[in-house]
Length: 578
Ligand code: FES
Ligand code: MG
Image (tube, rainbow, N blue to C red; front, side, top):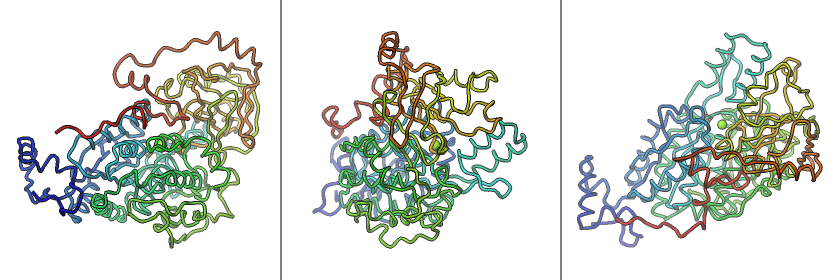
């Protein structure tokens, strides 16, 4: 059998296909059963396409067809494409939260690649957790891999007005609860807010994470900004397919791309994009898989020197990803950030990072701001610490009412999401605009899975008085499309006995974003007494995946990876016996 050129490293897939033994016979005869002949595979890199399509993921619904364009590119370059479906993690429909399953997708990606006869992989994702899930698995297995982003959906439309994913859902829902809009208008919002396939088109977790994948060097330059419904997205898909075949020839693996610089570049880009707070958790997890000690401090330092330049909601005023694309997209933004980036980092193109944006234009300075005219004087994200969050927590100052950036007020504590939902609109709720809403039991263990509950609703009685923002604190995450003075990811979480478990209604809570502090003003002796009386809640699961999750999930500041998936947990698994 031939196996590419004799000077090249043998293909990994040749272990399945080339051997003149009974196993090799079995593999070849079963390929022939599917209508393939020797010319289809012999000497050709086998490319896995990990496709996170499903009938109930509107963000990836075009993947069913788009995968054919990826295959076209692979075939054009002499590869042999094999589509391997993986769990879809539809952000809207999967309960209690897709975050419960990010690591399941990571495991699935790693094991799909390990166990099949493949030489490289195209990773098709975009809806929030799919990007980090796919990348985590690909990093750990370390076969040549390239990420193909789903692309944002088109701008929403309500009678000629632009609507943004998530952000306008929250906004109009508050208006509805305040009695300002009727059922007919609400239905018009429903019909207009998501009018094409593709992921959320605000700067939510999806747009943030696909930009991060590109900034890490794992996607073709410019790929992440192309709207899903643009013909350019189809061309990008086939170009991605063409490129992965060459990457196998070059043996260009994630480990050669994901240097420390790749992650530093990603953090700078996240900040300049006005990123979703979820980016912190996913980037920390990915960096740790690549064996780099990235933590909350790295985000905190970047937040102080990188201005928000992408004027995309919710940090920005009015624009969406479609506008960002027309304005020059990520390559335009990277060009503006050039001096803050390591342009020598390697990328999937085989060229240095800087080559992908050296001449990239910006067409609209209002959408992609120059460095001296940022979207906000506040950073995209701030990391706070104090006696309420010894291992840190995050908030998004650029999306908060400035009056709440230095605030102290009495806590109103909810022990769970259910309790919060039951009580929040009670007309007798003891609450003023200065109250600090606190919710616990929503972290990685407590939620479980750390759901996006952190933008606690404003109590209805205050909404009716015109209040639209309050200081809110929880161990939950929040959607990247959310906004407001929401302090999130409090670590350690209450379920494992973090100090959030000890707060009581009426305690004074003080947050000072400029000083990066968050404290409850309670005497140490009193806190000690409360700690002594604290009892750990029952575990959330008695069997199955959830049980494994509860035993092995890390805290937010560690990236919420499973301990046994982290680098250095044990000896490498290695190649399967055939
Ligand atoms: Fe898929 Fe928002 S629901 S990206
Ligand atoms: Mg989201």
